[in-house]
Image 1: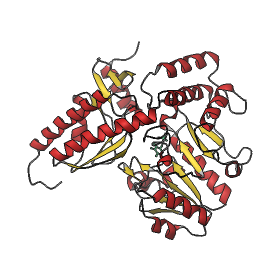
Image 2: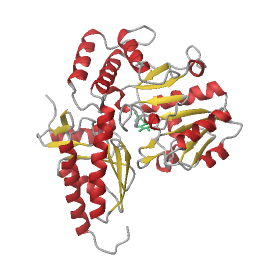
Image 3: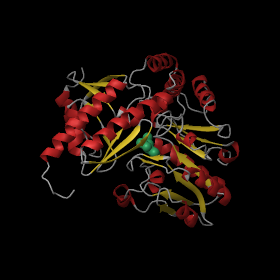
Length: 404
Ligand SMILES: *Cc1c(COP(=O)(O)O)cnc(C)c1O
């Protein structure tokens, strides 16, 4: 028998380290863009497992792939060949630029970044990395070293040396930061955790030209932006830029742990036998889920849906901005959308939860929307309406003239 709501919360609160900001929701099941808690309360899910569920919860095709593969084989180390793994690699090759034809599979976004950093070090022989202010690349030591937020970094110093942070969008600063020791530049096409900031037009192209010129590898972290999220299969397609190394994760496996680091034969072959590996990487179950996810994205043309519905969402949010002074800015690309407020968004998030909307933040004062791409226009309108009433409430309860 599974524990009830109170017991569930109690066990998790009492026996896990207090590292997650918990929201008091005991999630029981999901379907498409909807989520239900253990008491049967329904939510529209704009969190989607932190963007993992791009095709929607319990998509029949993904469910079937997981069931079928689980009955065949789930444990299979990459020292043995496997059809499910090869099937995924084959499908991925059909959607990425032809130059990115070597794929290392691992289990989390942070691991995909670790792999990219190791490959860059090995290929160039240089330890330096230029990363962006407000960046987020994960919380293992290597990934953390290129993550900007001091709150995450400071307690764990010393991290990797020779990482330099420059303002996102300033090509002159990148040029100045690249020195004889620099092996790579790492960037998110749309910064997610850092507050949903879209790369200014031309920036990625300038980065591509500059890194090529300086013989430095360009690593694109598309862990959050990849797999149709921004209105293209990958965000770099918006700007026609092909990176040297590409990191994928989050939506890749619809919630099953899987990530990927892609590069050219020349670059990836710098890793020699045994220099990098992971026990679960490329396991048949995660690969089956990822194959089904990718097929679904292609069949349902979900990047088009993300572009269209992202437009509807942003338009609705812009409408709120026009009416309510608490909204400072609406930003985003496709269904990766942020709303910057003039104050801490925690209250708003709690009010939205009460009204049946699961939402994310990105830093202190940005609300973040990462719904499944199968969300409907009606659901989006409901979300905007509910947010509107939360904001109106919050605005009326806030003392005037109080600086935020
Ligand atoms: C989530 C995220 C990561 C880290 O992924 P994990 O699976 O949590 O390790 C890295 N980079 C970006 C851009 C992300 O959004």
